[in-house]
Length: 220
Image 1 (tube, rainbow, N blue to C red):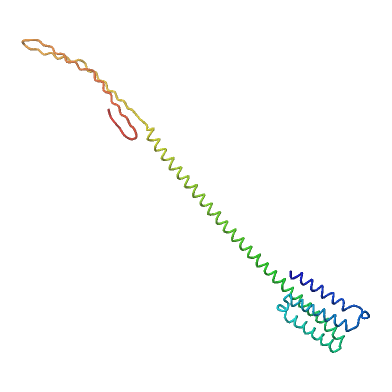
Image 2: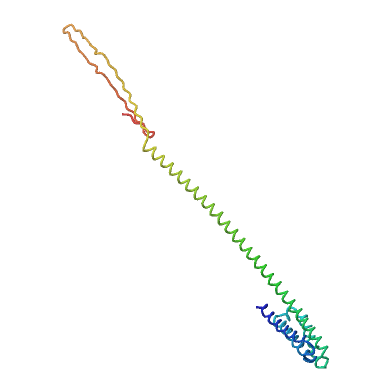
C-alpha cells in the first residue's frame, strides 16, 4: 500500500519535473520556475503523507526550507534561483522519501525475523511437548504390558494350583499279608474219658489300602 502510494506520488512529481526541464524556448523562465516549485511541493507533500516527516524529520525540513526559498526567489523575480532552489527541494524530498522507505523496509524485515523466531520457538516447544507426550505414552504402554504380563503370570499360577488340586496324584499302596497256620490239635487225656478237641485257625488275609491325595493320607 505504501509502495503503491509512493510510486504514484513520485510519478506525478516526475511528470512535473520533466515539464520543468522542457526546452527553454517552449516557455519562459517564470513558467519553468513555477513548475519546478509545483514539483518540489508535490515531493514534499508526498514525503509528509508517507510519514517521512516523522521518521526523517530533518530531511523533510530541509526540503521544505529549499521550497520556501524557491517561492521567495520567484516572488522576488529571481527566476533562475527559484528553479535551482525548487530542484534542490525535490532532491531533498526524494532523499527523505528514500531514507523513510529504507527504514520501513528494515523495520518490516526485523518484524519478519522476530515473527519467524517466534514461530520457530513455538514449533520447537510443540516438538518438545510432542516428544514428552510420546515418551509418556511409551512408558504407559510399557507399564500396561508389564501389568498384563504380571496378571497373566498370576493367572497361570492360579490355574496351575487349581489343576494341581483337581489332578492330584493318587497313590494306592496295597499291602497284603497272608499267613496260614496249620490246624492245631489238642488232645486231652483224662482218666475217665478221652476227648479230642480240634480248634481250626483260619487263614488270615489282611489287605491295607493307603490313599495319598494332595498331601493327605487315609488308612482303611
